[in-house]
Image (cartoon, rainbow, N blue to C red; front, side):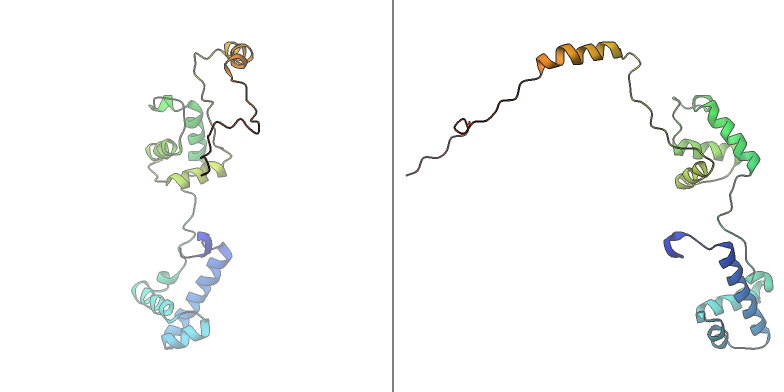
Length: 179
């Protein structure tokens, strides 16, 4: 990962890095060497080499910040539509049951908005907007709860074998005879 714990940069850190790159550009224009620029800005020579190449190829725009790479891909209007579609259920969107898996939500976002998310990114998006995972109750439609309770009270006590207590001489294993 490029940054510790994959967290990326905050807006303040991004601004500070851009300020350093722009300072480097001013020093390039003044004719300073990469090594001198790296020493003053306290960065690596490789970073300065990369900045100088970007500056040569695209001018000051080449070293300017491109903004946060983690910008939300869906606008508020799109998120509101996604929530409405999720509330309609998975059956309404062609799946065979009502379960919304992350993969299904990811596919729905792709179909509706032509935006690609990873499964993990889909989870983060939903979590950020107050959605939580749901564990469906795995019960048969035909289940009769009254019959289950009756069975537990009447049949199970008769079926369950009583535990036997082991006594000192009642071991079922035989010991080898001593010679």
